[in-house]
Image (cartoon, rainbow, N blue to C red):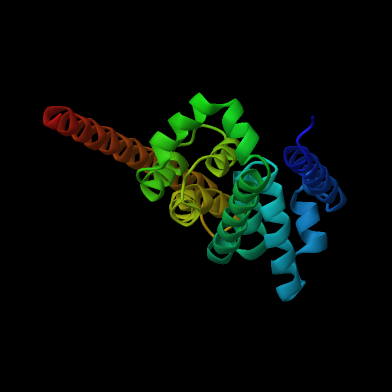
Length: 226
């Protein structure tokens, strides 16, 4: 006999994904560029800002690069305001993906990938804020996959999203600066961006090593007490 609840969840998951892809195509998000910004966002005041946040959230939620969004934020709104709006949109996109996975896939997908989910729980569950910060600072991995796996894991959403926001900030600053056309020599602008990227990566590596050392110390203490 077919279980109705998992079946309905699966249908709902597919329907929502199809709806998101349709909306993204209708909004022109797969061709998101300066031309789209000029037509839809620039010069439209608060409406343009809200459209940018909504479109950017959907853009990143379906796995498109957040660096492009940050670049376009700088292009549309300038360095600081563009960074702010792009960061808000990116965090909203991460939340959409996380809660989508949590609402529709947590049960049957966790069972199907039980071993992998146990690893995710072990990595993120102890300190979701710090681990999210580390993941986002390092320019590796898939943003979409990270959000999906976190949604399926037993990880507190708010600390994870807060850590993500802080970790997203350096790259958002970098690409918003590149897109802003701020009155700096282009070579200097890209040199500053490169240095920021290197610095954020080194911070991420250092935080990860500290976490590993703390985890190993905790494990050794537990083993010595048993």
